[in-house]
Figure 1 (spheres, rainbow, N blue to C red):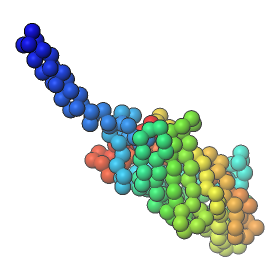
Figure 2 (figure 1 turned 180 degrees about the horizontal axis):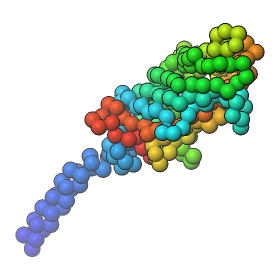
Figure 3 (figure 1 turned 45 degrees about the horizontal axis):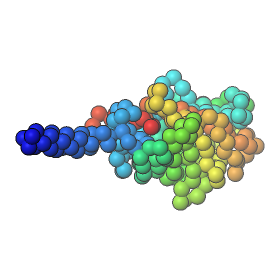
Length: 223
């Protein structure tokens, strides 16, 4: 009988040791942002996330929320650094460091081309939630309002149109395609000529979002 008790104690100890060994692996995938899959390793603080436009799509700045008059860019990309990645459920936080636009054109009467689009007052704060709808909130940083300067070539010469939002814009993420997107988000004109529309409605979908700080640049998942 004593021998059997000893065996039982040894078995329990072995089981406890096995569980302890498995626990670290089970900890992977517990954060809001993970790499490779929803159950993959947690994204580390300081990792750099990047993405370009989803293939075949454009970033647009239109003069109305539902219209097609304005500016369309075939190229756009961003780079952000993860500053917080708590256990799910919750919200991860990123610092948007760069956002670029290229290969832009305009169908606005009197505009002959788009010289440049520059995002000002970076970095911005990007909060990625894992609640219903997978909400994203891109908000101003310490430099002030989120501003974008659009330089247009017109029949009368070059003009600058400066748009801004002091409250930020909203978007969503999706694990299908590992995307982050914004749809018809308003920026108000703060300076520019009559050829600048009074509100620029921004839409773009970026993906796949990858973690370039990890070998192989694995895909980002939101849990």
